[in-house]
Image (cartoon, rainbow, N blue to C red):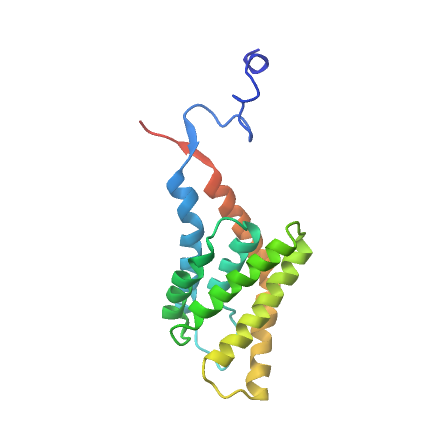
Length: 186
């Protein structure tokens, strides 16, 4: 009865939500940054091996948030997040700042050119960004580029590309958590 009487402007867009339930602005703004920073910390717990198999998880989560939610991260955010990643990734300081910022600019250009995309196009874009990031990180690191170094990076690239759909699902779950309503006290 009440549902029929209420105007469409008063109804909630995503279900009833309950009384006294609102989206937390703190959670809505902080979850993407916290997940990217925690993913950048993951290389600390990875074991050093003969060749790197673990892809740059911080960059993958950053890429996932940017592709899944195009307007969420500002264009300049590549600088502080790249700097934080540089502190824990072992790359020379400034490489993450440069590469993450260039990634944001490139994704903005792709977003302006192709505003409507599907999952396969997003996966292709992420795969291309992963390949370019890992190869550019090898160049920026100052290591002598040899065929053996390129062959050692291939498993890391393949794991990174294959890991993107799983990270996209995880980011979608974090995005649902970010926008979920919680009880407001007071």
